[in-house]
Every structure is written in C-alpha cells, then in structure tokens.
Length: 102
Image (tube, rainbow, N blue to C red; front, side):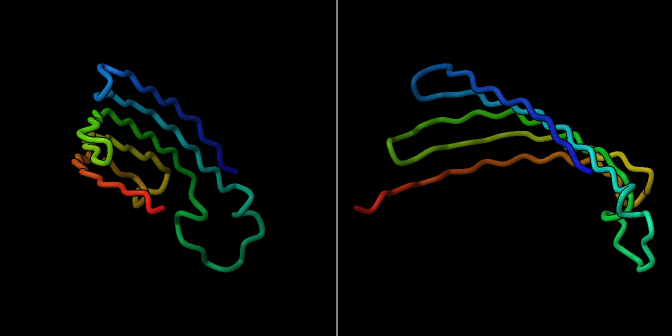
C-alpha cells in the first residue's frame, strides 16, 4: 500500500514574483507484495521505504511569455533496505518560453 501527503504554498511578493514552497511525505509499504511471492522482485517492489521531499523556490514572470523559476530541493529516503536509502540536494534554474498557437 502507498500513501502520500503534501502541502504546497505560493506567496505573491509582487504581481510578477512568487515564492513557492512544498513538502511531500510518501510511505511505501510492500507487505502485501511479499506474501506468497516466489519470484525474485526488485528491492523497490518488496522493501518498505519512506520519502520526504522539501522544496523552496522563486518564480518571476519576466514577460507575458517568459517565466524564470529557480528552486532548491532536499529529498531524503529511509528504508530497511540500505540500497534504497538516500539523501539528495537539487538546485535548478529554469527559463521557460511559452507560445499559444491559434
């Protein structure tokens, strides 16, 4: 069984600038898959793990069609199986151009 809970928030600093934050917590419980299983399965399908991901970023509407978004994200997974444990920090800066064809 899986479940996930998340919280997201946007705070508009100005008409063109927004602070974005999110926190996601996921639980993977594979007890039902392990029962009666005779074939070997990958660890992520039979081991339990919890994942927590936090993000903070800023978004700027540079023009009507151009958006600049930058964020920092920290992800952490805890598992009884050591190969599924990890911690990761990610930084991204993204410039997006959009155009709607009519």
